[in-house]
Length: 230
Image (cartoon, rainbow, N blue to C red; front, side, top):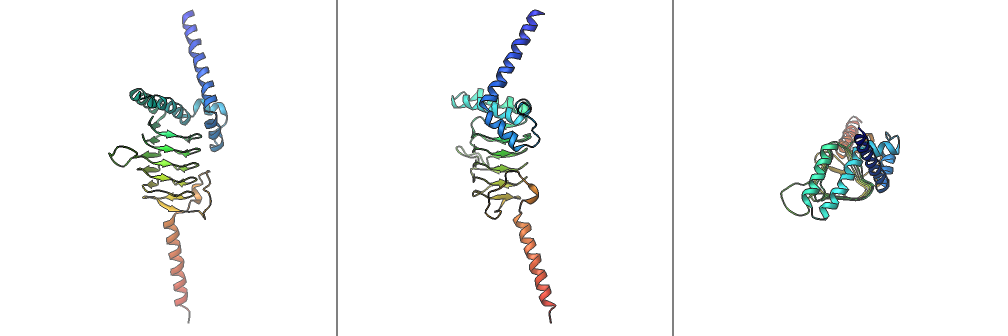
């Protein structure tokens, strides 16, 4: 019985040390989660319960072994993280600081994907490839980019800084900075040239097709009024 208690104490101590190290080395990511998620109640809650953070920790460990060319071990770690969190980040991807994966279930980040600083990904996002070619085949995501739930960003394309990818959009072409992309396939619309609000306000995202239809309706209405004039 005494040995069992000692083993449990050792395990408990290791867990405490692990969480202290995560709090130190991933402090910026935890504070980013607090800033971007209104449901986050405390630093400790994010540290212990947010699967997006746990997936990122596992990615950093796997990426270390990947760069050391221990490819099997790196992939093994990434698959364990996938099983535990529902988030699959290939250890070969390159990720900047401040990444926040909100909810996270179903997120996939490919091997040659590059993610800049302070990026926000929602559940179901795929940063994937489009073919069997070798080399760079996954997207490059700039700084301060928001990618909405279910969006697919595919191929060796670049998403410019401060851009916003709407929920369920499918993006297969480059996106300039400060742009909004919506629809399937993704269509670019700029919100008056202003930086996109990272609060991800789905209600006020501009759809260029709906804007065009609205403009056509106004023109038809104007023509009808002019026809009825004597």
